[in-house]
Length: 370
Image 1 (cartoon, rainbow, N blue to C red):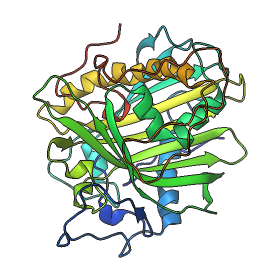
Image 2 (tube, rainbow, N blue to C red):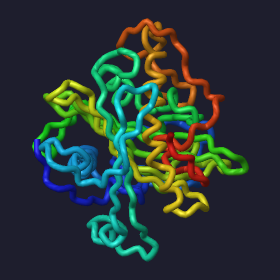
Image 3 (cartoon, rainbow, N blue to C red):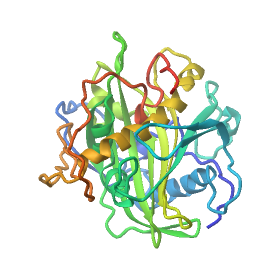
């Protein structure tokens, strides 16, 4: 399948969207610190996009943008390659890094965005791509494990394999039953839309921990073993009655946006894993300095995942996940078998650097990968 060159849109951007731009009909999860009765909030039912239109627009922006990293047509990447592929002990597959910058002037021209902001900056995206043998052997993971971990249990999986994630809760969810959308010649099904809040530990103190509220859209390409997970920042989620981490004064509300494409390559049968992200820690460190840390740390996510996934194999299945949210959620075992004994990542081990949703949320850059 060939896509036209990526066209900028107003949704999948680092600036994020307001809670008033969320589609109508979302059901919220009551936080542990409910909003006061005087707090004003538009739940999205007034002048909000319909759910199907919102999903369509998010996918229409994301599909060609992420395809530009490694086009299905076999053409050259539209992204700048950064250095040689990274290698990790836990992964058979090397990790290639990429970079793409969208200028502030180009963003000014995007219809639907807050036009011509005097403080608008360039938007720098970083990306990684790795191709993994479709197996439950050590050093790789199966398609079923990728699907289970990132499509079906994304937030729970990240909390499980990322040592710096110290909290994750689902704040809102939409009923997407029966919704299918046609985008760029493909039919997208098995769609989920939810608001997730993540909490990340930051060292050294007295730097504050960060929280990243996003609306997350996930969808499967019909007739293919392929899915996308798109995360869009909510820049005023602290005003929502369903916010918990975003209202916590001990946390800094930061932002990241990401597009993740995972699919089985038709030629080799390997699992291709692409993740692109732009982020802003919301701290005092200049954005260009934050960006120094991102490439090596998003590559590190591959090592973290493949170090963790063996521990999920051959575990007894726990009780179903509660949709009430909160960091107490547990992750069901991956649908695969292995002789490896469970050895979950300890949350007390040293901070390995900025990871995934945290991306560049440290005020000091992490050391480069070895």
